[in-house]
Length: 209
Image (cartoon, rainbow, N blue to C red):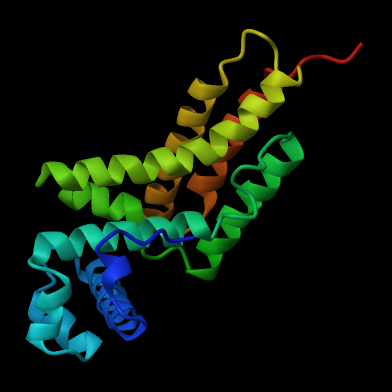
């Protein structure tokens, strides 16, 4: 669920709808063309708003891109809501893995991860972009970490297993797998990367007597 900023809470419902339309148009264009390849004029036309409306909600392109990062964060992580925070068993982890693979198959492996794509283009351009993207990935990682910590707390994972480190590695596997899946136009890299991590996690599970 998107949390409104203090500024957004001052907008009328109609104003919020207009702002949302601008951000959706910007997110779509930026995902297709990149930040450098998308102008505010193109966003204005795609959102069917005037220049004065666009700059009423976003003082410059930097502000618009930051709104797109927030939008894509909610979209990417929101799509996983039924899984993240509940990855507390191997069965749940493998269901999540299957969901990620199905998403890519539905997209014909095109487009990649919106957050990963933004990171590769803009993380080194403006410090605020990197901070926002790090916050986005931390939110994603937290959803994975909570389940692994729950497994560790109830003794399903061995004492020497580090759920925080495993969460970071699993998210890294997802991101690397998504990148190669986009480049190769098949889901095998994503499946291989995530399966390898899940097999490793399973190997750290406490043996039953």
